[in-house]
Image 1 (tube, rainbow, N blue to C red):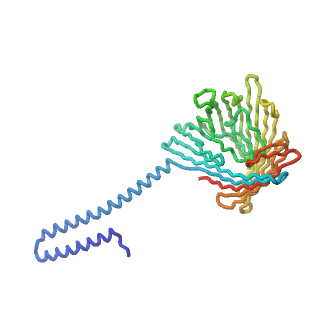
Image 2: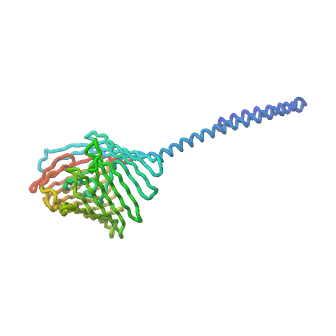
Image 3: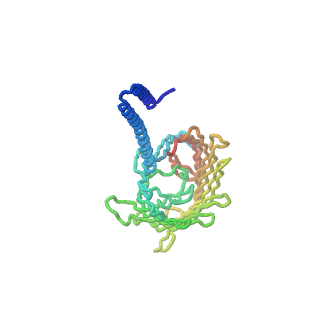
Length: 423
């Protein structure tokens, strides 16, 4: 049986005191110095009390130190949070038809590391840092503060990655639209852009009843030496639920810098579920009030369905219409369609097949890409795909420039090893 240091020390002292007590008793029995013996006994009792207090103080100090460390860690965790994500890819792209000698190896890496600081309950600061390979860039990606105005409004100030829109395949984020927008092509299924935000935003969000109003003032400097009102642009969005749908009305006002200015846009969007079918709609028009005329218009409608149990799969189909009356080298009316289908872990296996299809109806071109993804390790997947490019087009796919024609499609075999995660 083990005896603690404290108990052992007390036991020794108790033995000594007992011996002294017996010695005192024998002296009393002899009738010698009875008053001296009583005083000595009291001294030893006081000494024992002091020793017990000494051990109690030591335990209290240890408990206090542990509590201080625990409180400090709790305050740190409540006020400072680290987070991030990463994605690394190794790609092998082999042309199968018409030129089997063409092959394109490639690699990419991107990561984001962020920190959120909450010095007060109503204010927080956030910054994130981006690393990209092969460009070897390390940049400050976002940095901004959030402020809660007594629960009645929310302000965000700084460089953000704010996005509007409700589509899955086509781009409906009007916040980053410029004077000349890129038109959809077979590259719509590639990973989203890793370019960093370039504007500084003041975002105000005001809830009302079941909806909210959001206003944004953006400043994108084209000169580092001056602050010009011509660089400002703004957006307003009003959202409110109507029946099973969330409906939003929005507008955007572009800056007045030559080359990036565009006529004001006004639009409507909705999203919601009806009979277990997810429906989305988005549309905007740009109006020149001096003419007056509609110079540009774009709309996207989408239908999707998800099965979340067994089987676990989903399908999305979207159609985009564009009216363009501002660029002479483009069609006045353009039509596009895209489809995505995926079945996750068929029968509980490591195999997940998918299918992607894009079609541009004006030039009758596009891509169809059946794929299968194998989940080999935690955070790691390997995907085999056979994309077929058809029609007159030139697109960039996984680092390769691909040119197909109406009478000669281009068929590739692709293998992509991906390692990704978030923390």
